[in-house]
Length: 175
Image (cartoon, rainbow, N blue to C red):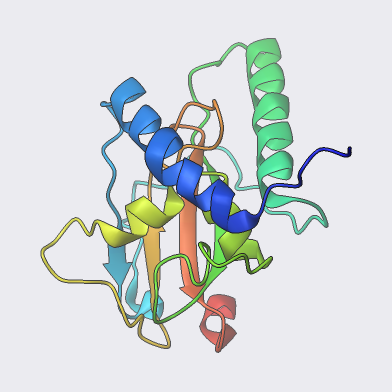
């Protein structure tokens, strides 16, 4: 008899029971929280905080977590060859999110990017725990949510920073 295929709802249940508590217990130095930016066009980077290194941006076709892990491995290899191994920051991953509900339909079995990310990480938990007392939902059309530490699989949460933005209107991302 062929092995039973796991349903996405079973994977979501396992994530809630096992994986999310595991990440919180193993990495207490990376608190589960997120920050709402109601209007991303108003974000300003203070003078003097810009890194001496150039920002590298790429749009790559592939699983976002696998791409981020490969990018992190490449960064670490390059940094150690150049002699500055501790200067790598988290790899930002953009999550096109459901503007009304954290994780969208991640428990029901929808096979969309946000739902798959939530089943592979503690992202849904970070989205539901705002750094302030105010809920992030619904996300304003020009806004986004930043989750600085998202744990994926057995990876250290310092590797990933997740930016979640409304899927209905991404025009503000090009500003």
